[in-house]
Amino acid sequence: MIDPTAHISPSAQIEENVTIGPNVQVGDHSRIGSGTVIMANAIVGPWTTLGRDNTVHYGAIIGHDPQDFGYNGEESYLEVGDGNSFREYVTVHRGNRSGSRTEIGNQNYFMVQSHVAHNCTIGNHIILAGGSLLAGHVTVDDRAIISGNCVVHQFCHLGALSMMRGLSRTSRDVPPFCIMDETHTVRAINLVGLRRNGFDAARVRALRNAFKLLFRGGPNMKENLELAETELSMTQDVRQLIDFIKNSKRGVCFGKGGTTPDFD
Image (tube, rainbow, N blue to C red):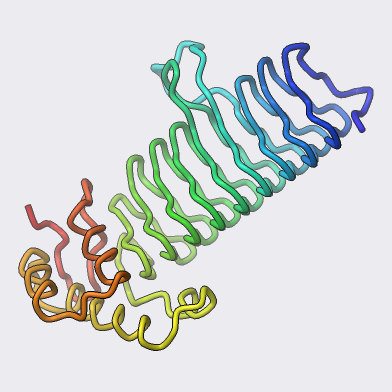
């Protein structure tokens, strides 16, 4: 199942039932899990672990050196879980300092020419559409969708079931369950995404009420949060949304009406 033109490092570990196509390169100390398919001309860098049943398409580069002027060839890592798909020419980089790592969970879909930079943490069931770029140290929680040609500033955090619309960009955290577009502006609750993931009417209604108070209320997020604690039905989802905003280090996206996320 390994093409004779492939170049596999002697220190790489290849498990059973792995398919490796023509001109593939697998770097030193890497590990390829059972059922994984690596197509022609793809590269798996050194110190990279791919779990089971991943698919690396033509020309993708998974686990190459980070794009960081401070990186000097130190041993750093990329760890990928199971069932991920990396389409054509996707690039994913390892950590930027000795012992650091980029982490990717399970069942994610990385579309053509998308990029995951060093030290990112990617959860599960996430879609990163074509041409989208994640800078270093970005965290993306489960079932988020990042649409085509979006850009995410370093150290940003994208919450669970959030969605960035195409061509949008953010240098702030994107709250869970919300749709964001243009420049870090939240527009609404991600209604379609919630329904597709089994949220019933009561859960959706609670989140819509919370969104309205937090992002369509007064211009001061600190005051809106204080009101939310007393006026909202505090479901688990609403608590998750409020805690995300409170714990944000970069500040969260703006509301359409200009609600500021700065509350410290």
